Length: 65
Image 1 (cartoon, one colour):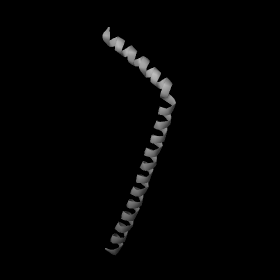
Image 2 (cartoon, rainbow, N blue to C red):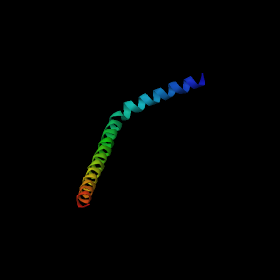
Image 3 (cartoon, rainbow, N blue to C red):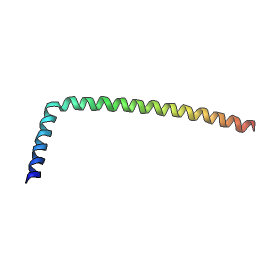
Image 4 (cartoon, helix red, strand yellow):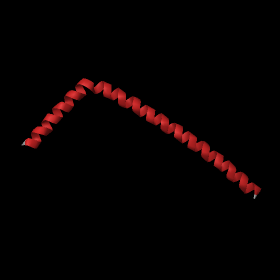
């Protein structure tokens, strides 16, 4: 009985929080996700440039050898 009462109370509090601050939380999550994805894209571009440079060096070394 006590556990089910705590669950119902938690569900009610969660619903109230979403009703009051849901829009702000959604905006925050979208902005944060956008920043993370931008940083991930930058890292992928840097990795691609590194691989291209490495490929050029290996190709040059193979031609020289």
